[in-house]
Length: 202
Image 1: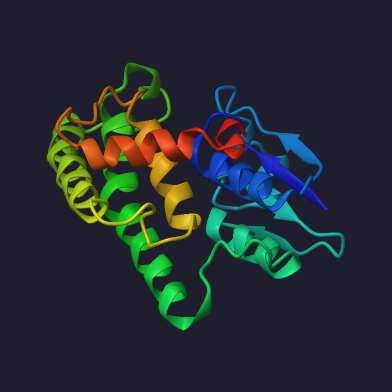
Image 2 (image 1 turned 90 degrees about the horizontal axis):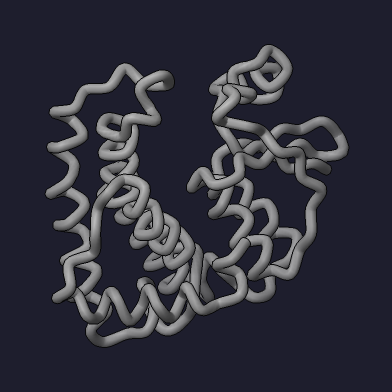
């Protein structure tokens, strides 16, 4: 088994945090995105979409997409459960993870990809699209702040993959030159709490 990792990129970090929460160690192969190693013929043979991470199993099976990889490891090591406990919580974790992916993570990514100077060589930048996503990100942060007023974690009482996605998305705001508004006290409390977990350093 080998995990092709992408360093500071958000999706590989989601998997590393998940593995740290599970107490799992997996052999890793670094993929240098800055050097465009993800676009080489060798890596394209592993993942034709040229994205990281990618997990190659001992039988040659390739699993891509960070949540699919996390699902695989959840099956290998169910404890602690990070996709929910029982049908109700599993549904809430899925709901919040998707809400954050579609409305915050993607918005922040669009701001970074279309406005950051370092991405000029990698993207066909459309600055207007980057600017259009700034209010989308803040709107989702406002929703999260309201929801976190009466619970410790995004999907309820337990830490889950929704919190991992949320942490990575909020942290990705820094290179995207976005800030969490000062008035979002509940969101800031949650962010400090999940950042303090040892897994956040993965």
